[in-house]
Image (cartoon, rainbow, N blue to C red; front, side):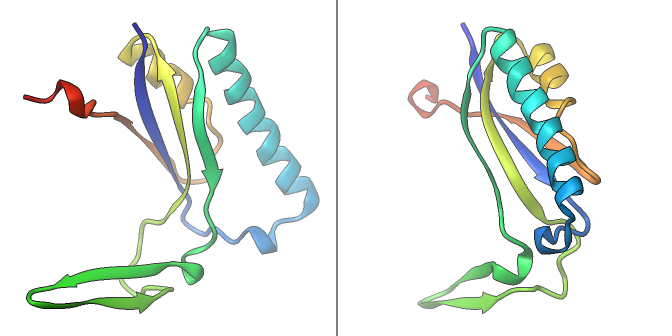
Length: 121
């Protein structure tokens, strides 16, 4: 039975508005190769998207006994930015790692198995 994984894509300097059309197409070709590999393995992409730069983000910090604090990006302390994600299935953890390694990035990716809440005691 296949399990679900979430892959976070982290880029050190993500600004899609500064990319040339050639850079964009090269990146998309790499993502299509990952997506094709998932399908060829008999698995599924459940969700995916790129995220806007950190300048468009909002940090929400809970406050004890009060309204949450909202801070617009960019955030001075931010060193690691999630720039996109995939949710996909894989038959084994090893297969998930092999597929995840195909995702193009100038930074790195992080692979997480999804915790199935109805299985938690």
